Length: 75
Ligand SMILES: [Zn+2]
Image 1 (spheres, protein in one colour):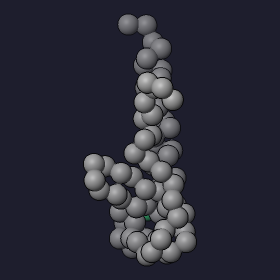
Image 2 (cartoon, helix red, strand yellow):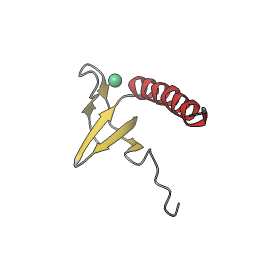
Image 3 (cartoon, protein in one colour):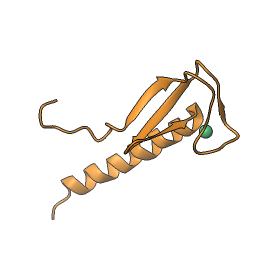
Image 4 (cartoon, protein in one colour):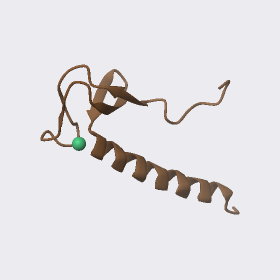
């Protein structure tokens, strides 16, 4: 990647190694073996369930689209 920094560095998909609770909603239980989204912020790691992760991805995608539109617009 060279000097290009990934905006998504702090995000990764992992498999739950043990039982977790979704950071967005404690009632969303992440069972061992399920796919989860891991968000690393400083030294903290937050775990999110599939549904909440998909919402994040959708929100992030529209945010990136808006950012690109703004970048490309004439000053
Ligand atoms: Zn959730």
